[in-house]
Length: 107
Image 1 (cartoon, rainbow, N blue to C red):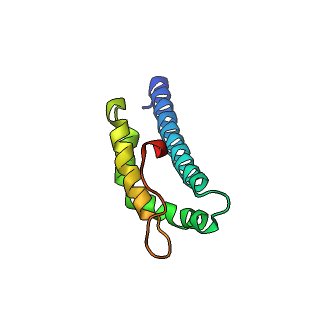
Image 2: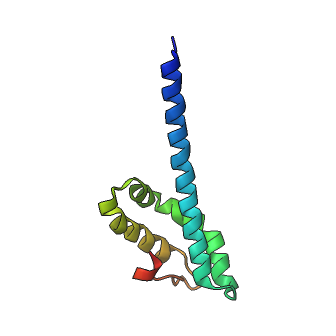
């Protein structure tokens, strides 16, 4: 039998999971928007590459993203750098050269 306390706990847990998913989505939107901004408004090829390749590249490195999202603050920077390096090297131009390079200002 489900009691009122059980229902409250279930609703609380459901809200937490929803918040995590929202935070995850917001983080990805921020990363994608930042890459588009780095491209510049005039570089349509770069913007197109981000639009086309971001989701497949993210999915390729989702394990690294999830590790970053779950990390304690002492490990966040290192894990974000690992994910960013992988993601940046994945978004490429027609010749297969990466559009982005990891440096301290990109993180």
